[in-house]
Length: 362
Image 1 (cartoon, rainbow, N blue to C red):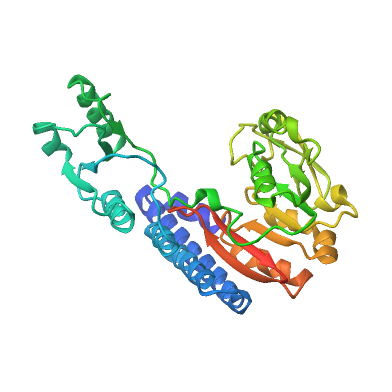
Image 2 (tube, helix red, strand yellow):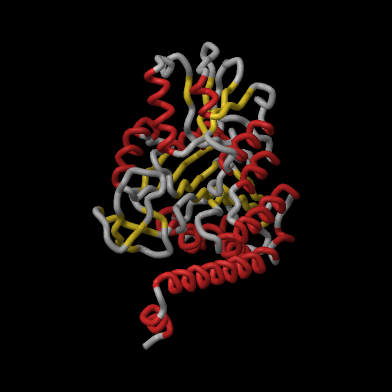
């Protein structure tokens, strides 16, 4: 009998759960320390202080899982509220002084709206509800209390007299993702791996300003492929849609096709999809730029683009947040192919998602 089964059989449930929690905490800590140790060795290859700051903050997150770290990164890069409005001020209504409340206040203190918000508890507001015309309300509360609050607003005939924003706070830099480090060059041949609905291909054409010769857009989710075919139908002279995912070899896999931005492979699913190497598609084309957002398949996809990278030294734009080991595996592999590459890091949200690694030989 293995140790795990022995402990499970002979220990009370609460002791087993406690032991299991301790093990996973220890395992996560050891994994985080290994990632940090290897990532630290790559610091000389980053080009600027902002990149090193983002790297350090991501390392800190591995150890603490404190999401406020990413708000600090967003502030460092110039935080902007991602909703445009002309309201006189913002009313933040909260149920208690929680982590979420502290996060929200820190966000607005660092934004352009630092002098345009005030706070009220939900009880204070319900006792004396009053609103300015077109006021923006941000409720900071648990889901069940949010429903209670919205019902109160409806019953008091206030729901449609104001704007209520209950979504996540962003950094205001979302539109810059992939486009704030590199300038276009003549005759750009671009790989857009993980093109979702084709929007990034359109953005690359706009960014290129006539310098884009060709874009290969890869997408394997059948629901998203249908979106791409519709959105890119008028751009077929510039954009070639490849109805496959990027990988390190030709392979057939199964997915649960959802049409979302986070579709990934699995052993069982409702759709059969095809994967291929970038090198097999582009052949002898002089690729100038490769962008990858492929939900954790970035390393496999880079391996599948090995020849194009060695031959052409394209600029690389690679998502850097899907797995902790991305912090060292991706730059290590790129340097193993072309030691002259150097890196930038940029972050595009106030959450752990959307850190991007830029690489070039310039």
